[in-house]
Length: 442
Image 1 (cartoon, rainbow, N blue to C red):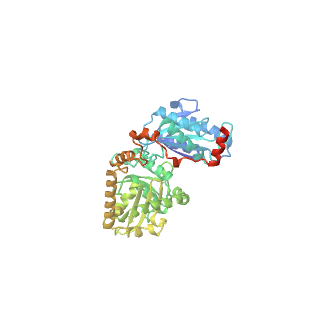
Image 2 (image 1 turned 30 degrees about the vertical axis):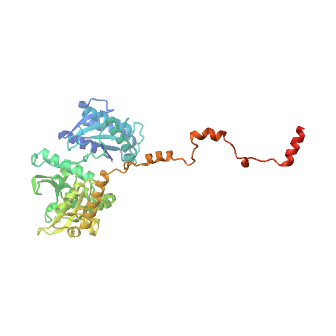
Image 3 (image 1 turned 180 degrees about the horizontal axis):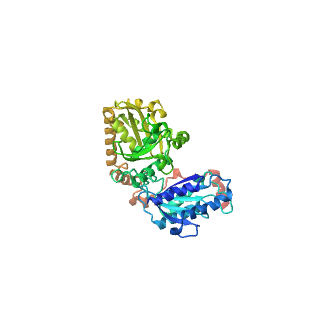
């Protein structure tokens, strides 16, 4: 699950956004906490006035509204009851369980998701602190909910871009009617909100991925001079189809004037992702001794990165725009550095692909083959060799049969025991001692 919190200064604006989705059939109100009425009996005034009662208690607080989005993996299909449970548990964990809030289920993307509207002004007029609420409270809450409800983890490999934007379906779009306008609005709203772009050209590089383009018209037109902007659907070849819509007619009013204020803000917001993108590009080149343009683009797409080479009418390449869909950023190649300009990258392309692992020299290949054979031979032999049969035990038995001190033979044993002794070998008594002994006996 992916959670995102956007703070605002207008409850009415948040309500209008979600209620317009409901009117267009792209959303449904599934829960209203602490509103005192059934869902089908709640009017727009009931919703707005309930929030207004609180925000009026502390008019000094400018940032008084929250727009929370909980996004689920495309594989997950939670029903209304499960979404209500998850929303309730999430609001409790971030400290908004006692605040009134509305929960809308949106149907305008490939993945299931809900939007929650609330205020940070309490019944006593006190303000609930919002500083770093995402890191302090939302992230721990998200992880706990993933465990409690068995949701696919945002960090897991199974998460397939939970906040992915659904491209406009060209075949099913009814040009000039509400479905077309709604489809364009959904794409433009998501892109302008989530991505970090610094020019209209960069914004279009993102939008074109979803079959939409923003156009100012030709330079000699009044629309261009007045900074007008229209949005159109485009086909797979980039041709505009159907009726375009003015930026001022879309929800959120993504006019050029409003976008230009974001251009400046995004200059700083995208900086932390610059080195990451350069590393991703370097990784592709480092894997090949030679690489073609098509393979280069294909390898980047595996990392969810889209590189667009810009060409003039004569077919000459004059620039490159790189969209990092994972980190929601976009850069011109020259903004990354000279080594990443269109010319520098194009100069590195070849007519064939030669991955580095296939470019071993013959000696390296022989060494590799020899080593592989060595490993196989080791696997076929035992490191503890079996004992060979020896004559050690037989020899030991023979050694025991040998006698280093020759024993007396049995038939001479009695004779040896009773035989005469050698007088010379017995101790002698001196003559004077013999006389004394005789005298004592006398």
